[in-house]
Amino acid sequence: MKPHELPIKGSYLAGVLCALIIGFSPNGLCCLYGNERPNIVFIVTDDQASWAMGCALQDTGHSNVAAAVTPNMDRLARDGARFTNCFCATPVCSPARAALATGRYASEFGIKDFIPGPDHKLFNPKYQPALDPDKSVTFAEILKANGYYTGLIGKWHVGDWTLPGNERFHPTHHGFDHFMGLPGGGTTPVDPELEKDGVIRKFKGLTTDILTDEALDFLVKAKSRNKPFLLCFHTRAPHAVWLPVAPEDWAPYESLDPAIPAYPDLDVKKVKRMMREYLASTSGVDRNLGRLLKKLDMLGLTDKTIVILTSDHGYNMGHNGVWHKGNGIWATKKHPPGKWHRGTRVISDKYRPNLYDRSLKTPAIVRWPGVVRPGTVIKDTVSHLDLFPTLLTMAKADAPQGTVLRGRDLTPLLKGNTPADWDQDLYAEYSMINYAVATMRCYRTPRYKLIRDFFNPQRDELYDLQSDPAETKNLIRDTDPAIKAVIADLNAKILAKMRANGDPLLGELQKGNAP
Image (cartoon, rainbow, N blue to C red; front, side, top):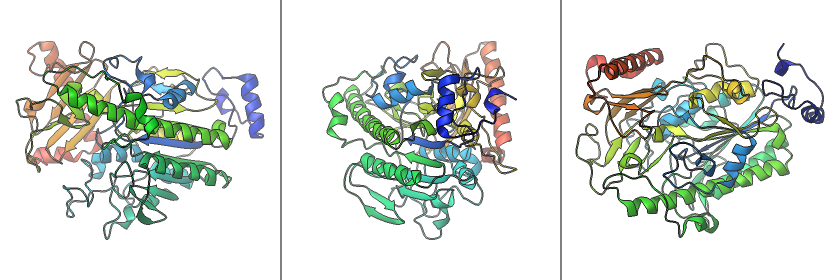
């Protein structure tokens, strides 16, 4: 029997005393929880770049941009573990969130791009993809079945339940006992329309603060239930539009001349303005994270609660000449020449679909009292797909037989024991269908990254991440036999992943029809 499997019983106080006396075991796990199941607070911010935290400034490649003032995210990182190479599965809202919720690629559920709601100019009532509860299993469902009280506050965006006949897509049919938040994919940063108690109505105030108020109320109610709880707190910020923010969130940036990436013909004035607004919005998230952490302290829940923070995907702010995420928008004064995507539904050449690391890489912090050593930094490659199996381990819950999960349990890494055979490679996907068409799949090793755009092969890309971590030099046309061998190898791995996932794109390729 391993040290962390010892059947320690007794009160929570006894567990705390045990932790103080014994400290951490060799594998990084102490007896703090005994047989109790920990509470879990799972925070997902919206559009937050991995570089947008103060604690990330030390990371390679982040010194050329400004970071947000984030004392509470920094505190969370000091108290727990921070992953420096965590990636999403798809760098745009709906598919990224579907992957987070299910531990599977969104293409497996037919979710290719963000889902436009009724108030969006691209809304099409005849095309409404969604995460169907009859065809998917979320980690919230499993934790609820294992005795957890579950709540979702904020953004869901994996299916519009407000349309007639779509009621089954509501978060409460995906494992959440309680929901309050955005009925669609977006809302304003102030005076938003939100759903509460099944009714959509307008609220007064800053959206960031309103959602946090509800999260704090959930914590109070959850404590009284005498059972473990899962709170999924999905913020709206720092998604654009960024302003207005609270005066204290704007103050650090009002006179700031922010550092931004260098790129030919970059609209520097515009990017610097956007950077200030983006960072201020991120500081608003951080201020409210502080409120949430303080509430855990006040309720005596801190040592009984795992806190996880990530974002749905990464973000660019002038990097490689674009801003935004996987559906990047040129930040240059003129759109660079070249065919960057196939036809559009909205005629525009402003989009630059991409699977850049800046779009894929997300912040990721885990505070697990008594298990994770404070100040741990994990450089291993991990994916959002890994969070589902990790949450099951944390909650001491098993997935139903036959549940398909694409990720791996991260608890060995969190305990300081990276398995010798840990796969440091990454596979990601994005089939952009809104605004432009791009059918991209990529395979990333610590050295190289190959990006295929299957219906636009002139857009294929290969980057040497060791010599070119910013992905500025595309080697796809390089005639060096060694480079050609790399391309062939990574292309084979992309196709193998597509086959393993049952990727519908394979069928589209066989038919020769663009999606």
